[in-house]
Amino acid sequence: MSRNAKVNTLLLSIVAALAVLPLALGLGDGEEEPFAGADAQAEAAITELEPDYEPWFSPLYEPPSGEIESALFSLQAAIGAGVLAYYFGLHRGRRQGEARAAERASQDAGSSATETEA
Image (cartoon, rainbow, N blue to C red):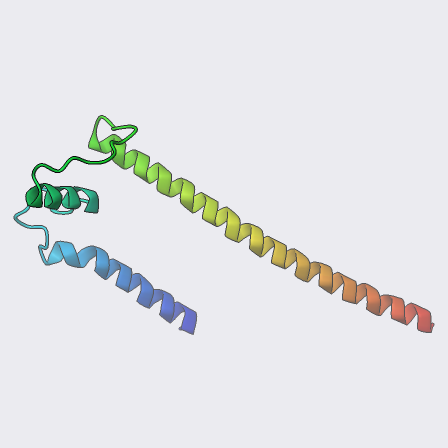
């Protein structure tokens, strides 16, 4: 097994452990929403500490259900991943193109040098 395969296996097992351990240890037991987001937890903590608190801003769009909110969040994540993949792919392609151009230039320089000697 190569070093890269070992590292990939280790990283994959860590990710799997991070996904499974909270469920296996029952970290969300006894809560109404066991794995609520940070926004919901912050809102609950603020209203507990300061019941008269009024937010400074209100959302521009309030989705009608949690499913739509999750779908919009997933869409946002997919668009962001696509932009990052495009960026990294573009830069890798440019590097490969520059390497090929440099290789062709060195081959052309080598062939023109042999032609002048003949």
